[in-house]
Length: 386
Image (cartoon, rainbow, N blue to C red; front, side):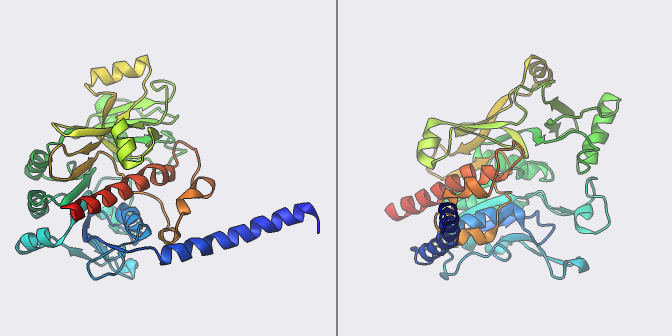
């Protein structure tokens, strides 16, 4: 048997054995009960991508519900529920009821509002152009949702909310009340990195952004490189194109020293998805977004009163444990089956993501996973210490 064949055989055996060991260790890992309420109103298909990665964390870290059963991403949440077969376009909505709010605030250990954007006509019905804005079927933060968060905050329960809870289509009144409750204020600006701004290369680029740009500037869309698009709630559009306006094409998240130590997150990481510009009030800014503009880009931001650095993660400075993520942090491309293997994160850099700026999977493995695991672990520890 040649040396090269022996090396090959060793690696084959290693690849076969490691998953078995990981599954075995996960199976006998200690279970921890945490009763989490998950709200996701943006579920246009059976993938449930807007909350699935949080469910992955719960399962991987062996958190179970009060009945000692594991969390199921297809069932254990409030919001929009597509019904099988999806081709029939039938759905149900699991709402937070006013009469149940007090009981729910007592029973749940925490709440995570992962997405309230909702489901729209073009998302739900087949054969419709999904890149156009359309009529809402269901979405937005409602008064009962707000009342539940208020009751839970009053009881010092864990609260996690993220973009776009404050943004469209949440009504102005509910937005204002939630801003006051969490002392987080939305400036009206949203943004996103696109690997290609060329509508021929990127046919999925939203048509509504093109229409807004044409209406605002009176000229056709001429961008072809990668870049960042910023949209204000009153339909203003600002485009920052790579090389023309940007020194670094993708926004970065920079963590504070306290966040790095407490939540085991890296100092910086690229973030190639939707984010929003908010003000932290009297809370603690644990991490910030940074748009790396050149001198031309600086002028564009200055003329539109847009900062180049703004909060990414906001934490409470008081006794009530709450967090606000100014991005779609829970929207990650991760396979649920990988949650059941202990130590899977150690091989993730070699198998599950690349270093491409547009690869969102890196954010999950290197940032979201340790952040959420640390938040849950510390909440459990603090609750047991009381």
